[in-house]
Length: 498
Image (cartoon, rainbow, N blue to C red; front, side):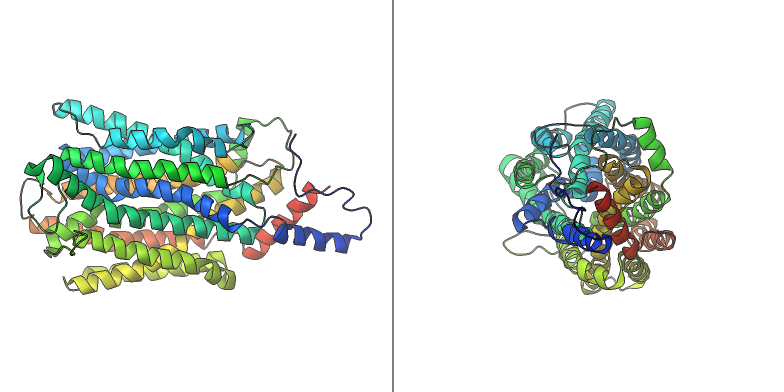
């Protein structure tokens, strides 16, 4: 059995209880510090995930309607079906990861085993076969579903690492911020590279599909396949580095206990803070998914600013995404300091409330690029504050449940966070496709109808505002304050050292 690195021989024999409490607190705060290299390595994991996830979140609907060749409604339904069942598959991945035993730990091995399948499935998903309409739809369902499965198998164990790299709540908050910072860096890189890559490959291999418009990306099928393949190679390398540079430290209180899946699920479903966090996280991710999914249509159909940046070839949509990611990154970097001062719960609620107000204003601003980018910066700052707090709160819930049940189920609980993420994006992508279809979107025409433009404007402003208000209201009932989280960590450390 691996020795608990936090445990010391005769820890309680020569000191009074007050002294013990102080040493336990110092053990939590000092002996589980994570090196800068390891923090960066942990960040690389979400950098890889985010590079692919942003392609699916921002570009997949456009790919399926304008490149692959299926309707917006069919694509939206596929997103919902594939991601909803896969979201619950995440729970089984978490259960399996909690019970994995290897020389590398419980969760790290999955980064090694599935880095290459992750990249390969992305390429297969963005390949356009020479099939009829029915064959294409079947191919889309199969490949998209398999991609989501592979994403779960590598991302759920990765997320669970946060709960075992350190038992220090402050250190976890920092790790979560590193994770989200690198996630936004990964997204930023995707937005910088994907459109120029697709346009460049189109010119080299399929000049007939090179776009003539300044505000739209190429629709050449081979260009999309090669563009995603290029990014997939980068993702695989980042996962290998994450595996190599990270370590698992925190051991369960009852490490040798014969765990029961049924009992773990029962504990989870009776965990009130978990339900609240899943619900608020779902609303926050739905807010992002709807805004991001409709953006490429909004700029091409409504804004219609014909502009490409010199040297890079970025159009207005890409610039919009890049500005948003930069603002997200600033928000992530500021989140630890702000949450340390005001608390995670209060910071989350304030950020969601401000985002709701700003998203509502977005609907009424003039159709001018400077106004759009200004609101994008402010809204994305708020989103940047929220996302690292969510992941850190799930780590707190792992500790809370272990204290109550003597069972540590990091993989299961973190898989639920992945589940809420996927459900949010699934519902967001499905709603985007359905609403576009409802408002008569037609990829065959150059100028969309006025009702279509109204639908696109609603999806980038008022619909996300409603999601923010739901997240704000849900967080009002979250019971784990920062003070309570620190108490839980100290009580668990006492149990580990007994």
